[in-house]
Image 1 (cartoon, rainbow, N blue to C red):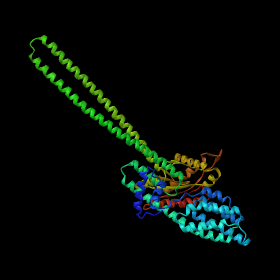
Image 2 (tube, helix red, strand yellow):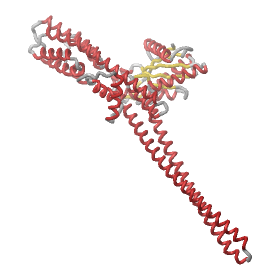
Image 3 (cartoon, rainbow, N blue to C red):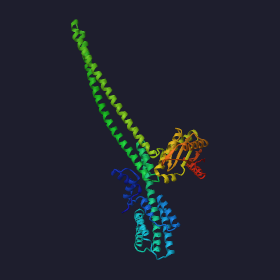
Length: 504
């Protein structure tokens, strides 16, 4: 595929145009696919964690060293790290090669092992190779080695070493391309947000996209962001359509009202003419018998005018009711849209603020601290043994533990406090008007309340605890610096035996 010679900014604008033309949702995956298509880059597939773990189970563990290296390979696959995977796999291959050399350099490898290597190579090649002709040629050469029976161990070792080195470089290049694209996408989204400061609905969507492209990227997180953005877009479309309809209705009512006022004016002028005529005739009356028909005409003209006035009032009241109903409907639509946009600042699992929402809340609290010179304590807490809970009971139980922690925390928080999910099993609590010693006391009480609260999982009661660090913002300190100090204190609390609160 021929690469595009245009500047990255020009390719980025073209990619956004293609997204709009194809009516694709503005997700990072869609944007990256369009960008790669225009720029002539190869779009790498996702990490094949499942197939690699399945193949790993078929690799032999001849001794303790091989078993240890296989566990290292498993950890690198679960961490989705190509570099670690390549290093571990190479070390494993070298151990096997060394064992084979010690036994007999001319003895071939077992067929199940060779077959597993072939399958592993087929799974890795499309992801790492890209457009690197050298890597592909080396992989094909390795395929040739594996095709011979028996496979020569030393030859295989040499090919694996060379392929691992090339795979490491190719993987690093793919990671750099991904990082560069994410930075570019982040810049484009931020620029759109700066150009649309007055459109709060669009700002909510932009915040959602910024949260979506923050690493680490997970399909679950991207799917949730896409669902919320679709909801915002749908509500925005309905609100705008209803606004157009309401404007048309108001124009029609205003036109009718103007026409009606004109007719009322004509009727009023006719009534005035009749009254003036009756007054002139009244001045010429000489006999009392002539007053009766004249009085009847005046009464009839007055009755008609009263009926027309009453009808005008009814029309005006009806128009007013329609205007109020339309206004109430638009207000409700706008409230729904605002709520949908605000969801982009919340964690989809726990409904606590996400990193984007935390950044905004922290900036507000720091502004108050600088203005009124009040204390602000920041707590960073981490659930103890959370990985063990996930491994024993599954991720569903882990999710429920996070929700349980947030529920108990909110019961103990003040209305002025802020709770945010910092990442994984880590949470941040902002406590305004709270010095360090009081902040430590508050989090310690929260630990006791969490211990009392019953968390049921797998039909059994489970004790949920956390370790926490608390830091008070200093006069010239940034929020990020205070978070770093709180994180260090939390780490010390973990090292001291967990289920503790340390001040920074």
